[in-house]
Length: 309
Image (cartoon, rainbow, N blue to C red):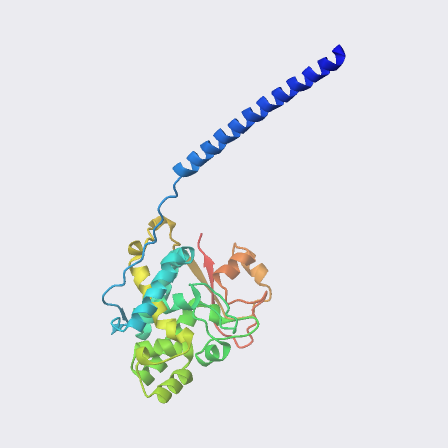
């Protein structure tokens, strides 16, 4: 009987202890939740604001005024300013590349009497890189093969002068001179570079309007001039749009020497080694070379660039 009572008291004691432990844990859990709530209440997200660049009151392309009072034109330009301001990595690279390649492009435009603003068209076409479009347009100026050949560029398996910046720039100048002689307007000439002469002529005849800003065009050509104008504005005023790049961080021109070639080069790897460089460097400085050798049965003069350093 005494043993039975002992077990009863032990059971009661255990129940009391378990109850006390449960109450203690509940209290601790409550205080923990209270602390978490206090932390959450005290935590505030930082205020985040987007900078919206203002559009200048006056913009032009090649001295031809952009009619910003037209809401459609205003919104087209604003779109491109916003896109290129907030697609910051791409725009930073363009600013860096422009410091290297504009000095090559500018004197050629001047030589042919083409307005300097067309250097910004090459930016829109290729971001100043030797890209190839899905349609097959290539180089800084994005020439299709038929147009490239028409304006004097050699395009073969071994040589593709669409990748030769100086020659491709000269070819683009010839195209623009032809276009300007037809329209007497640089804005339409730029539009035709994107849409083709026949394409622009077709829309002018259909709509009975010879003004780019009043023509209804396909989406790409519709945006084309606004993209050029916006890129011109950003590259001329980079700090205004948040691009404060130290001069030493820009890509600088690299001094080269010219090697005149008037005969076949059977092995460009060996040719590179003989001139103190490797094949990769040869191709980087002469991207128009498209194979491991250079045929030249006609005795044509080629100029191969070799870095001085």
